[in-house]
Length: 361
Ligand code: NAD
Ligand code: MG
Image (cartoon, rainbow, N blue to C red):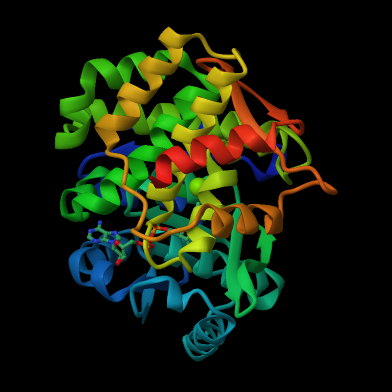
């Protein structure tokens, strides 16, 4: 088992990563969590696959468990479902000596985390992420949220878990498309922070895609360590944390322009990263060679073609609405070399239109 620490003073916690680590729950969780009631939040898919194993391990460790299962998918990340979970928590008699566990992808993690942050003004919380995206990204860093009908993730809190438990066995059932969408965020960490991760992925790509345990442990552990470093420096997104938005400026615009129906988040981010690398190459931040190397790796993840008929104006319109824009400038995170990015407010709109038009063609 590999362990990665997220150093946040008194809010520090450990991420445990390994295959078939369910039995170790008995040893490790009681060191951090008092015996008591547990509200286990999951979605219908994941609960059917892994709920039994987690409940058995929690019983073994001396916890009492009440499951609360929501439908799979983004539609469950709402205040209405949060309210249903508050009811389940009250009916289960959950108090501050108990805790909430999220077993699932980013949807369950964000929703259960938000409920944990607000129920009784905060009860302890554990993440058991089961998608690659949740394991390398959403379960680490303490952002929790539900959606509002006027926008995604508008209602939320920064709230750190007590523990993140990454059971690699869960990835064996994750649909390939979801896996590759998570892979896009994996590649992102290499581009923004750590060239050796790019080299590792180039060398071990087949093992990574096949889900071989040693490769996954190394890759996922490295991503968690990189995110932990960023979060430790900038817990509440005052500055550095913005580099995690590499590929997300155009990625979000593509998601918005297609009403969140065509791309998975990671697929849109991958397209955004391709366009950002092309912008960086045009500005001669990246050499031809570096850009080619990154585009080759992105191609292995598999760039999704734009939907037929998507107009550049629709994407550019969405870009201008982006909540991360500062004043009238659109902020792009661009690589200066592989492993180092910076934010730019002065990206030439014509260059943006050009790379976008080439993708939409
Ligand atoms: P998800 O939670 O919807 O999971 C994707 C699908 O895979 C679902 O149908 C789910 O039931 C299924 N699934 C999950 N694990 C499985 C497994 N092991 N085997 C088989 N099927 C499985 O989607 P996601 O991509 O994990 O998360 C997306 C959400 O994460 C979005 O709401 C996004 O806003 C949020 N997010 C949050 C942060 C953060 O910092 N908090 C960061 C990135 C994304
Ligand atoms: Mg993302």
